[in-house]
Length: 454
Ligand SMILES: Nc1ncnc2c1ncn2[C@@H]1O[C@H](COP(=O)(O)OP(=O)(O)O)[C@@H](O)[C@H]1O
Ligand SMILES: N[C@@H](CC(=O)OP(=O)(O)O)C(=O)O
Image (cartoon, rainbow, N blue to C red):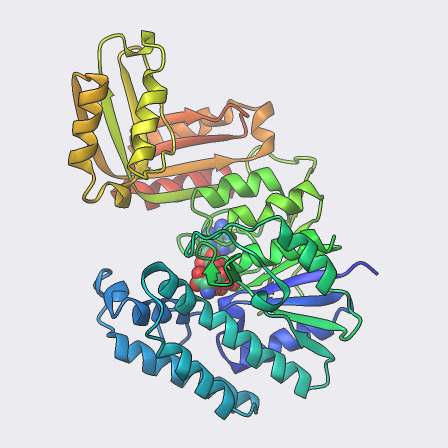
């Protein structure tokens, strides 16, 4: 029997009643054998994720104070202990050993800088998996806890942005052999470096753990359980009552999730795509719903499947006469951005101009030096920046056959008097991007949704 790997996100394991739902979901399909869990997410009482509280302790309160959130490191410590105590009590788990060990970890004084952050960040998944595994065992499941540090989920030494190392796949296929247990429980998000130190992947990284396990075990499918019925045509926080997209290709979801659909970590699907393992995004709160199925291919019934929006972007405009004739100009420009560690999104260009779209946050404290460096190396005539932009991305493999869809989009915006700052079509012709001022971005999204998807 081919098994299913199931990842339950923070919202699915945030409290005892959610964990009970997880247990029922696991039991209701005999293929669901490998369970990946996140740290507890936000709940009715706590506005911040346990993972953020952990980072707040590691950084001595800086993590929240930088975001102007008034929670001290001591308060984070108390919140975490309270959360795990409550979980143990509500699930009937013996708490002393787990809480003592958690307190010991949270008092760690030996690790420094990134290694310390990574270790603290990982503790939410570590203890939540222990606890949920205990609960499932107590309720009759023959389940074994598989810790990344024990079976060898090996990451590169970028402690807070670790990348999976090839050896991990061999380790998984060797250890997950179902000889001593029927089910395996794995904490997501973290792994261990070759030097045996804890590292984490990027935020949202439990999705990655699930994707890598599904790939290494050649799973039947990878189920990603969250708090929405699937992937909606537009962000449900901006537009209520949008439809769930039943089927999407990997490419479509990758484009949408890199442009604002943060329902799923877009790197988590790379290997599943390679092995044609379908990903099913489903709701723990509504397991009857079939959710969204992500596949290698699908036959498009429509032009457009989804519209994503990415806020807090900035465009850096550069002008220089005949820059397009200078071989290597764009390459050198992008090199400068990469030297500053700034990720670039789009770069519409013309004979004398080029604009580079970046995340606004990345310019903080960098912009003056960046400007000087560009002027020095590329002798530009003028550089200016437009802040507070939003990128609206329209995606669908059907668009390839109907590029005129863009006419409908622009007409709809014109009728609402919404002008746009930038337009760009992807080379694959399955997505196009519109840059609008952020203060009209919600209304622009609603307008496009009504015209093109409703
Ligand atoms: N198009 C979309 N479809 C579904 N959810 C979306 C979309 N865009 C953004 N989201 C957000 O993604 C959230 C789920 O992701 P996340 O909070 O990481 O879940 P989890 O806790 O399960 O890992 C949803 O609650 C929703 O607010
Ligand atoms: N807990 C980690 C990893 C993760 O994947 O979480 P979630 O499933 O809640 O997105 C984070 O907050 O980044």
